[in-house]
Length: 157
Image 1: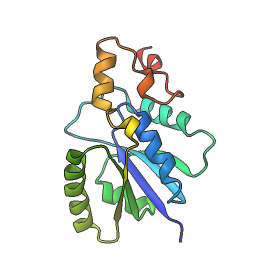
Image 2: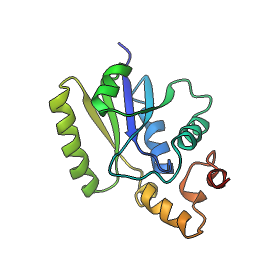
Image 3: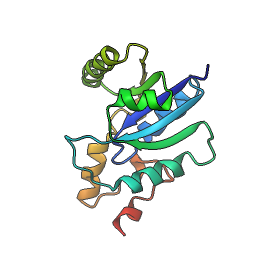
């Protein structure tokens, strides 16, 4: 049976840390779906179509990675996609506590869905989308925090 994982997030924007987790996840899974979910608690900074396009560029030529979006519970998206695994990255102990709670709720809703956590590489620990957005908002150069395939100026057009 094919091992399919969903890597869910808002990816606003997609960072080097996200890319690293996905690429390392390919050592474990046959297919990874990078899935942009709607988070009702967050206002999007970059449009959904821009984020989808960026992630597709980052993984162009990698047939085992699919990019999608969804507007439902993550467990429901996983069922529809045939995924039995959620892939998540952990940067800090605070991330673990937050992700553990979500994982337990997801498991209570869908007992066959397993969550796999990968530790972020040390050089990416400080990078998060919120910080990258702040750099962008104040005119800083955020290119060193996102994959080379992402042109942040593209979204300004």
